Length: 114
Image: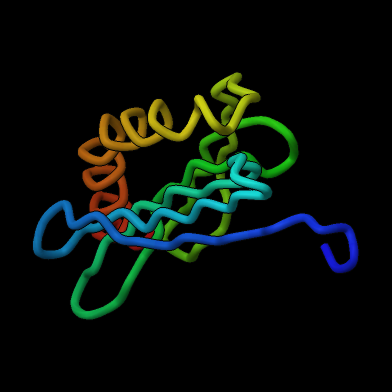
């Protein structure tokens, strides 16, 4: 924020899962405190990147967004966390627990032409 003295820093990094999967992590800090974050699961199929699901804290609460093969949001489920500083490690663990399910779901939907 200009003129208020607030220092805003954004950090982005990727965590490789396998040769065709990774997590993109984005963390925003204001004056050293985490205020925003997003963890996106990215799956590469025949050179195309897809985002089957994402966990973020937009809209004031931590939630999982689930996307179909066209990128349309088909589900949003709250995880109930509200404090980003404590939530990021939990959200990362939660995302890692979802990867296998969402990979299989997404590949099945692609095969079925959905």
